[in-house]
Image (cartoon, rainbow, N blue to C red; front, side):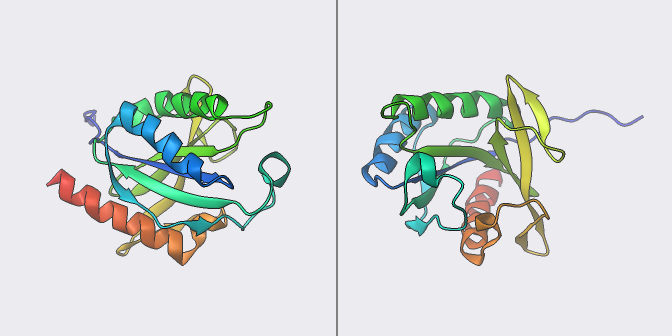
Length: 173
């Protein structure tokens, strides 16, 4: 019989997109108050691989990724997602979100994103939150799965997560 082992702390990441650029810093201030300082901020990226959010957010969406210095427990992902959802509501206008916050975590082997939507490849964490292994680490780089969102498949995003992984691996030493 195998013996259950604890999970190493995970690297908290949050992806954000909006067309109101000032909201990046506004949301980040709240997140840093809750989760501590960031140790990585991505450059501003176009969010243009889908029109799914156009009706709710409008056009010309931009994305940023952040990683946080303080590591989290993987099982805390539902709490982080619920906090992010509440922050989205707080920053909304006239019943519509103004910013989308996508928390997740990174481990040496994978990038997991939190979602409220069930699907065949997602695992239920509890509290209405599912986890999706969006990228896996193999042969010195993250690589996508068949279900990986189109933007997360891009070289630009994969470079970002490889960079965050390097920061994380140094923290684990």
